[in-house]
Image 1 (cartoon, helix red, strand yellow):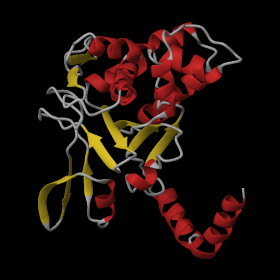
Image 2: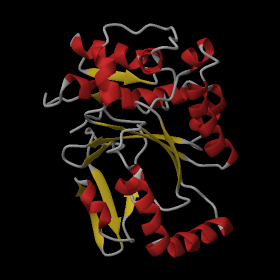
Image 3: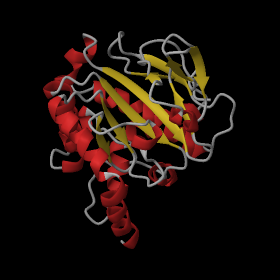
Image 4: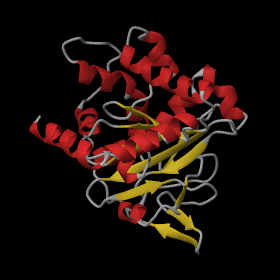
Length: 276
């Protein structure tokens, strides 16, 4: 708590005036560009990694960056945590016309490590084990695809119900990741399928008024992996600025080069991408 209080004091002394200035600007012109789902892990400060400013994004955090699918929501309507993710999407995309929905997973995820360690996923809420119940219920589609990978299926299919939205992905073709991190990458992509399963958003997705994106943060090396449309790879992030052509961005540190940098996040609608 002392660290938090010291931070408040420092904020008042050094940053409050700039924050207040930005808040006043946002009040006059409030147009968030994205809604971003990420894990509660303390190492994953997405606003810093992606250099988001006040008013840029709606932020939603929960263990394992979960967005429940239609099936689990229908079975567990009393699960407020799961429904809050959907309510957040409705607020951002339907009420505020935010176009980009981004899911951010990461390596060495405690939630994914726990999900990987459990032998089976039970569709039952246990009040005495809220974390395990949360992971087992809403992580079951990810575990199912992970089992396909273990059985030798090299290319996994996502959102097969809608040809315009469906995509395929290769997970760790070089064989460098831990099994839990493989599950984490699958799980990150699975959330896009979960989002697309909800009827209230499907019309906007099919008309291109909303787009789905996935990024994955390597907490060991500080790398951000992302899918590029029309490229058979998963991992190269592009930046452009006023004075240079497109170039690969491999580490999060490069995000600090200046205000003129623009991130280009491509939707997952084509190609067979893979993380690298």
